[in-house]
Amino acid sequence: MLSALHCNVTGIILESYYLVLFFIYSALISKHFKHTVKH
Image 1 (cartoon, rainbow, N blue to C red):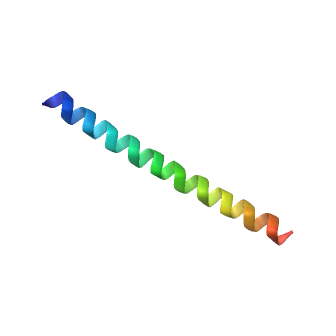
Image 2 (image 1 turned 180 degrees about the horizontal axis):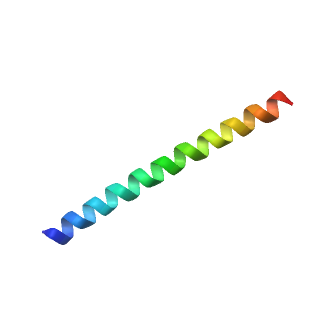
């Protein structure tokens, strides 16, 4: 039971971590895109 709960928590943390990385990546790409469009 405890190990299953730990596995679930780790999965949730990993999911949110990848979600944050994805948002940062998208923000950087959109910023870069706007920068290139400006020039």
